[in-house]
Image (cartoon, rainbow, N blue to C red; front, side):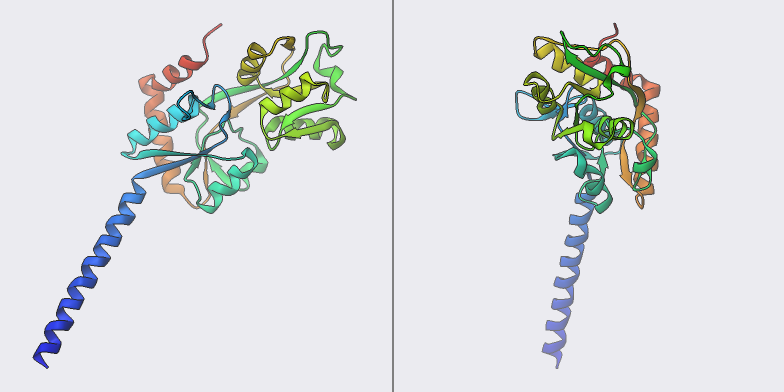
Length: 250
């Protein structure tokens, strides 16, 4: 009987150690901030020459993670899967040049805005499209799930929209004559026009919007911590420094 008690005690010690180890593993996992993005939206996110996700959002997320004492891990995925990913817990936060909209606010919470985006129209240099008013009756290329997609579908109808997985494919469709124009954020638009001859951006803006980080509805603790870190970065001038690194004042 005494031998049995000793064995039982040893088993209890082993099980306790295992549980403590498991808890330690959980803590380690919480030291990682997982960011979801779609790395085809320069300069906010793109894949650099070292095959790493870089850009404004990646650097802001890294700076926030550092403030929180966490390491940043980035997961690149389709833009229209990001809301589902953060809502389900596959990622902790989404930074993807994502605009705050009432529809998205039904599914996720948004941080304080960290940047302003402007939707613009890319056309061929010889295009008859001169203003936003000329988009009626035209075929419009957009990136699936973006606000350009949402706004254009609302304003011009589903039949007017041609959806692509990323902006580069939409621009390629414009060059090939499959669409008459592309509606996308101003900063990636400038990058696409600079990289492709014969294209230009209309002088008139389509819409102005605020970019923010998306966080799961039930993760209010992370939302509060993220906003506090973001406020510190703004106060320190770090946020302006990151954005200024990629977007030069004109």
